[in-house]
Length: 575
Image 1 (cartoon, rainbow, N blue to C red):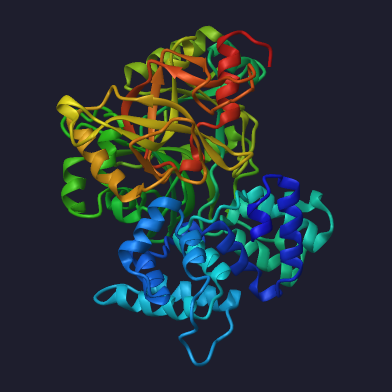
Image 2 (cartoon, one colour; image 1 turned 90 degrees about the vertical axis):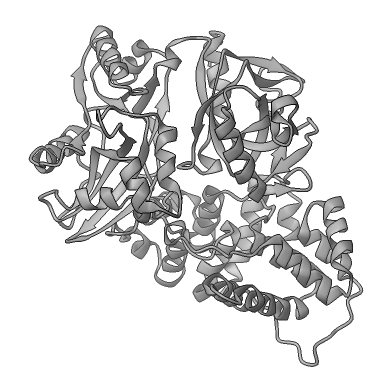
């Protein structure tokens, strides 16, 4: 682990992983993969460790015989509890008579028990389980066990790197990654893929197919700025659909059983009992479809902004929220039906299948998303105007003959928003990484938030701007309370920023920002040296759009490469 932490080279990381995988028993490989990913089980199962930093501080205090205050002070200085433990436990006196060996299997089993421990007295049970593990561990082992437990492993290992290493370790050919990636895209479970590969080989991996109630990694769209460019990307003929301002969902149904998954593969069925119910009105009884759930005015049925929908993402008063914030379900794709994979069918064929099963549904809250085939910029612009009239964000332009490519982003699907048509205005999804204390009306809140883009090559977040405008008092209050859960004493290890902030946060909460333009700046790390040496990229006059993107993971936000391309297009610089 130390060697992997000390390198930023993807090639070196891959080589370290290959060595690790080759030395791991086949029946443990899935557990290794989950731990590297910072999880216990695949995302869609929704299993979390639920270990608080305070619990870890108590354990360090207990086994080091150092007060909680001193441990906390050390944490404020270092900013990483794993390193705190390693430092304070160097002179630890052995307190157990018999040591049980610390193995990956034992670590995983204890983490699994911890994740399943709930209810009264659960924190004390978790404390005992973890304390027994730490007592048997060396200071270095404690460092990484703590990082595993808190999800702060600083290895910078992306899923694609893990798949490269698996292909090399088990097939000796990195080209076979494509088979692993394909299996991962339909199973959303890299641990399962690795176990099948290790135990049964590449052929068995190729036989992993779509299954009901296991979400498929969604196909993603590229963005362009003009209608002309969008039409060129689809060779002059495209299917255009309304781009709704809602939450993308994947709906699985078998008989009366319905489960709903978010764009980030979270099971959100309990938030949307009405969506599950209306899905049962479809005449086909076994399917996987994709739809956009949009908040609507309960009196006029007009579309409402995305932020209204987020009231539905609260754990309590669900029945009341369903009543107060009704939604419409706008279906746009079908991935599986009656036991058959439909993703390889051309887009228009999938659209015809949807027409067959959706158009006869009597419930007006479930509908097929508005769509039109266009062959000219004029037609596309007219449909864009129509979408704006209906309260939509813009359009999605799709190649008429393209299959559904799970987990892939490309120009088979293209998003074009109203904002993108201007060279000066754009919208980006950014993650909050820091905060500055407010003044005047904002005393006791945050006056400005430091935002970052994601660099998927280095698996880090890079500062891009500070934003302080566009926030209502209500949203500020909501953000202040929520950000409190992710407050950390020092800058997060995966955040690159030259700026000093009053408060730092674990990159978790994603918000949407618009700006007048992208500019060069020596202060921000996004796109550093990509355009001019010593300069990064920032946003001029950034403004919060009032959208907190709870449907997006931090890794799903605007990517550094995307930001650089947007700047080049804005300045008419050749790509």
